[in-house]
Length: 316
Image (tube, rainbow, N blue to C red; front, side):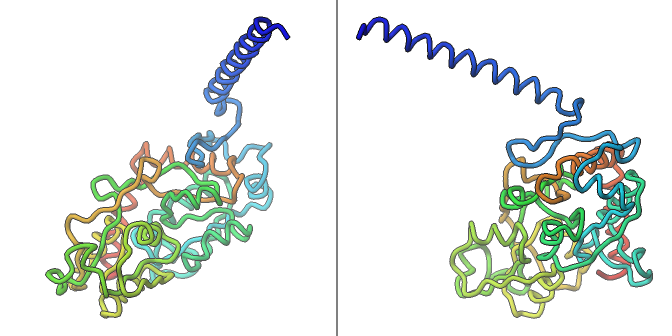
């Protein structure tokens, strides 16, 4: 065989492959620039949808999947764990659907309003929230959900909202009386630790804390605080912003955060997320349109302040 001819063919094949790759890259770039205009909603490299739909005219007539079903039935069903003030909690002075209050519940009501449908809030334990969406009994999960790769692999997640800023991350909460005895991760050996089941904090425990006597999981966040206060647990892995708000709103609780301990994640982890069944990108693109509206107007942050004050008033 002519070796020179073979080398030439090899160079030509390589050049063709490079050219095709360049064309493919250009095509992908062009698609990425025009997906929103074309009505195509894609997940990014972190597996969440960060493009938005124009929600000013409600659900489009050609809506597909769950969004199309919501348009037909006229009802949006939202799963939540209503024990996480100021985002979602129960106002005992109210009844029925009106009793579910908080910044996330206001956002759920606004999403339904922009869709032009009725809203049904479905309360449940946090560990069941994502299952309800995956199984199709609820359309959306709105429950202070943080981004997690495992969630993104299983669910379709929205872009972020409710950014923590300076208080971003998770930390260790203990009883104030134990401040001298428990000063960091190295002090947790022979101690009982607790976190909310299915939360980012549970995952962070598995990743960063190895030496302890027992690690317990509970389904309701209030149970984390109550268990710690009762002495049944010695430390809790908590969201720093939420934990700080709880301590500030309950100055007699006797709890504190260990200073200098903060577990943080990358940019993709910033903010809370709304979740839908995997593949429901169009539905989440509609949700993103409402999130854009709330972030631009500052309304979500205003709701957080409003309902933090109400939670204090109700001693939650």
